[in-house]
Length: 148
Image 1 (tube, one colour):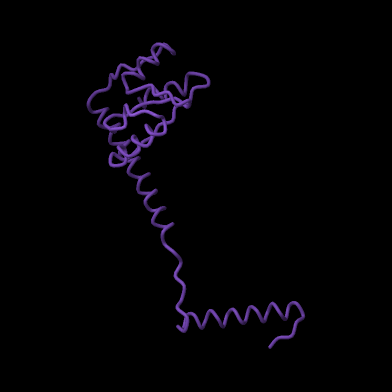
Image 2 (tube, rainbow, N blue to C red):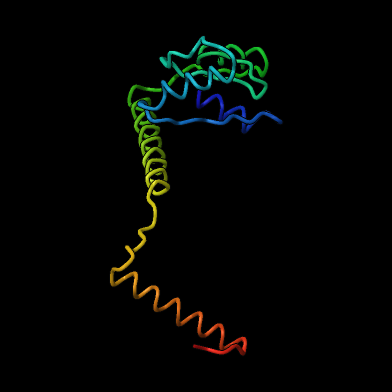
């Protein structure tokens, strides 16, 4: 599917394929949500990848996409990779999906962390209050106001 998508994007005007590389643990949930948005349950179990159009038409799995490309664009993918090539592709996609997942999880964790505010009465809070008074005094002096 990935190869056909890239082939079409490069060679067919006005066709753009977006490849979603997801971590295997994330795929079932993503597939179910995509199917819900597309109004279908055909691939909601998350057992296989599938293709759809921007209009919401589900093309289908790899075989369906290959047949659709043969009919519309006169191009197909015969899958003529060696097992070693397939393993390399899978490893590359898994590494990319894992890296993207890690970045997403780090961003989520960062969004949940709130800046630490010093407790009132602690040295840090008193120091912050003193600095606030200094800056307030400097602002008043700059405005020509009386400084206490």
